[in-house]
Every structure is written in C-alpha cells, then in structure tokens.
Length: 266
Image (cartoon, rainbow, N blue to C red; front, side, top):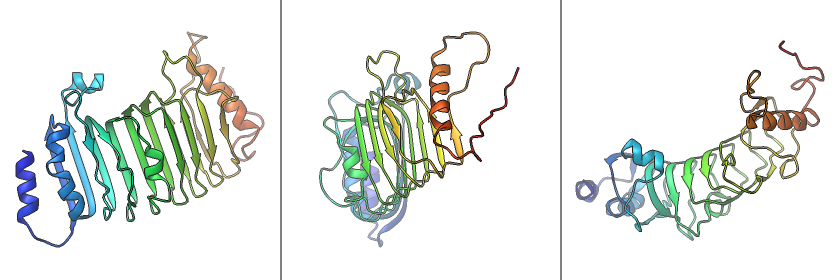
C-alpha cells in the first residue's frame, strides 16, 4: 500500500535512513511516485525495491499501466540503489549530482524516451559509482558511459540496444549478455570499448569485428563467450559470433591467457 509506505516514512522523524526495503505486487508508476521522492530525500544508504508482476506480463515486458511514467528523483545522498521495477516506465532526472552513489542496479525497466542513462551514470553526475547493472531493459537504443570510477559493468537483455560506448580507465570487469542478439534487428551491433585495466571480459552477444571495437586488452585474464555448439546445427548463429570474438582476442590478448595453440576436442 503506497499510502502506508508514505505514512511510515513521514511518521518516523529519525536521522537519514541507512536501509529501506520495499516489496510490492503490481505497483504502478503512480503508486511508487507517492512515496519514492520522500524516500529519496531521507535515504543515505541502501534502497531495495522489488515490484512483482505476473509472469506472463513480465515475459512480455508489460508491468505498468499504459502511459504512466515514473519520474525518478535524484537520490542526492543514496549509496546503493537496487530497483526491480516490474517494467514500470521511468524517466531519469535531467540534472543533479548523485554524489554518494556507488552501486546502481536496474532490473525489468522500460526507459521513457528520450532517455540519457549514460549521462546519469557518467562521472560528472555520478563521480563515485563503482558497479552498474542493467538487466531486462526496454527502450534504450544508445548507451554512452564516460566514467573514471566504474569498476564493473553488467548489461543483460537490453532489448533494442543499437550502440554502446564505454570509456572507463578503471574498469576491471565488463559483462554484455544478449543485448545485441535481436534476430529481427536489421543492423549489426556497434560498440566501442576503452578500458585499459580490463581483466574480465564476458561478451555473450552478437559480435562483428568491423563494428565492435575493443581498445587495449593487455590485462585481460578471463574471457567469456557464447557457448559453442560442437555437433548438430553448423549454421548456428552463436558459433560464428564465438569464433569471430576468439579470433579477434587471440591477436590482442597476452599469450599467457590466450596461447598460440589451443587444445582441440575431437
């Protein structure tokens, strides 16, 4: 009950909140908007929101009333945000520094266009953000991140993503899973990754060396790809992506990680 959450937040005049956990069933943008701005003003620690929607609607990416958009507040003092929104449509704040945020996780979300997530999570507005996770997201076609602080980025199931640009000199781990693998997409994935300190690269996605570019990979110690189908469908799409990625990485990764002669299973 959104009114009960708001009443509880208003009733307790305690110091800034260190921990707030909220679970809801079928919450709408309007019901979350009743209490979220008040929580944002009070929060100095961790906010966890789980909005449970029926499985059929979750699979279809529908969890909110049509036309409703949740305007996310700035969260000027929050440290960690983990929001499973049940496919509520959200609009990001266009200004304001999220000065203390170190972890941001958005799951099952529909971004309301125009949306510049990259601007919100880049260094000028999120100077201390270290971990970013975006999963099962709709409505985001371009993502450009320029961050001096990010150490880990996880992107999964970003339906409609066409272009990814990451400049992150401190980044140690990058996971990109099923973001460009839309069989109906007519264009090839476009990505430009500059992360010279990268140690873990997990690219379980479409790969074309002419449009997906990695910078220096001298520090990569762990490489993850699609599974490779050894028997059966020789034209299985994942196989080609996997081979192209391995061939690309073999030329730039250290020989200690990527030996010149790979073992072959027969």
